[in-house]
Length: 255
Image 1 (cartoon, rainbow, N blue to C red):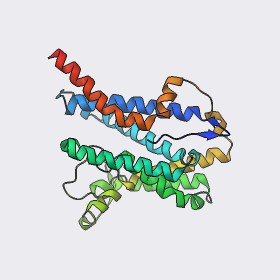
Image 2 (tube, rainbow, N blue to C red):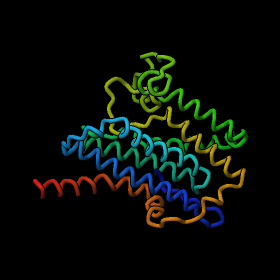
Image 3 (cartoon, rainbow, N blue to C red):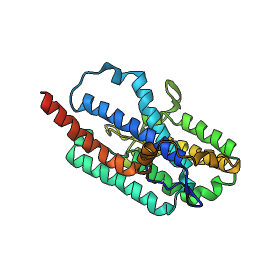
Image 4 (tube, one colour):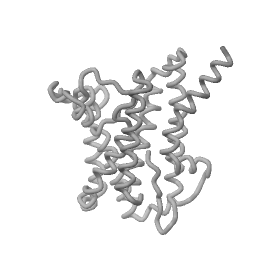
């Protein structure tokens, strides 16, 4: 969710900004629906349907994969990684104090900040391999660990191995993907499985870079959407308070 500067010779990759901007718009709309259902008591059966789940997952996958794709394009990686990680930590502290029933612990910002920092020492290793093979292996590991939060190796309704209960024992294991019993977060993105999707994005970038395909991403399409993508971190931080104030005002006037 970080503000990346996608530059090569001072030229932005505006298409990446646009993709992130579309994801930001979808995130705002989804969170508006979440607020209406969970905070304002609206009865909306569709929100609990597979379609809504796919919508939510599509937003998450886009942010994480795109962050991995853009990993090599950003400047001051250590600084940016710590900024994103610490903003995620502050968000956890704030929501735990102000709205504990809707707290965010180990949310998407904590995940992306962690991935950014962890991949810095890993970059020399990741650059050595074949990006197609690296991408395939990353996605296989992502699929195999997708259900790790529920105590299994597997994906969706397909579980191949039950993991030991004693692995799910504290906040450290929760951070890695094995949540302690009773753990609750409205926005939980553990390191596993999501780090593998981030790495898949890195390999996708390497493939495009080696095949000289990145120039296709330089064209500017819709400046308003691209602007949203360029300011994604600030928008992520501010959008929920603004949504709540707007919806609260609307419901107050109507009721």
